Image (cartoon, rainbow, N blue to C red; front, side, top):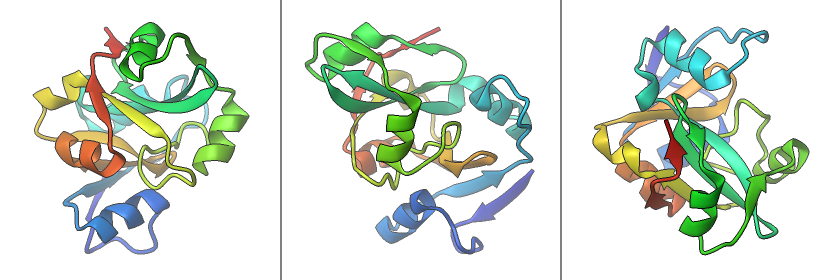
Length: 166
């Protein structure tokens, strides 16, 4: 596993560029992505040697016709009803993958809550607050960014709510 600090990284993704521009402390972790892996998030946790409760996946859902980002631990799943409630909606369903990719500018399995093409409302699972740092996608498969949950919430204007299920 290779680690790079923001000063060592070159090029970058829209997510890492956004973090650098904001002056946020973060660490980039890269690993060799296995295209046959059944779960991008679990693969990331295992490759990084990090507890799955600290690695969060970025999911895009449709809440009453509006695309919304949900950030939940890879160890569990998204509670769609709780997500709808967190944003004042009635019904939520997983977004069409093509619409999620088109709107965020990222490919499935590499969608980051940061640096999206169109900024979507974001809900971060409340369990993130139990950790000093969490990992989220840095904008492509095989690349994660580790940062403080408060920094992620601030940069995405996220609402913290219990939207994950174990």
